[in-house]
Length: 193
Image (tube, rainbow, N blue to C red; front, top):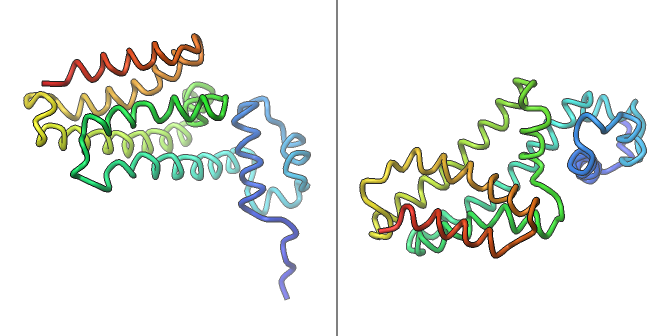
């Protein structure tokens, strides 16, 4: 009979995710993970893999959660695309305000994706999915005659996806929600009819 794990997989994964999120990948040691997850290495390795594999599992969980939040804006195609676009652009900033920390994916982009191809590919794949959300909203906005009909929507979707990181950076540096709202209004003005 197999021995029952003495800990909750998802609960411990959340602990590791928050530790990577707060401290970063490079600063977080295996000893930190042991102490915070309250399990020893002999349990971490067979369950989650090495430190990088654990990070990949954490990023996957985080990205799936965030992507589902973005995809909620695709549920009702009768919604005003302009309003949905503003909400999506605000989503990452509002999350950082409530969590009082930068998006985990953004943090990992700048900390490790530059040098690690596997993590880079994972983050790029997720970014493409977010771009598809923007693309769908832009297509809907053109159909609703809210956005310019000659808009290069693929480039604009990629631009908006990247802009959410810029908005977040701006908020982290200046802590000025009004300025972020003005920047979102400017982005919307650039594509509106």
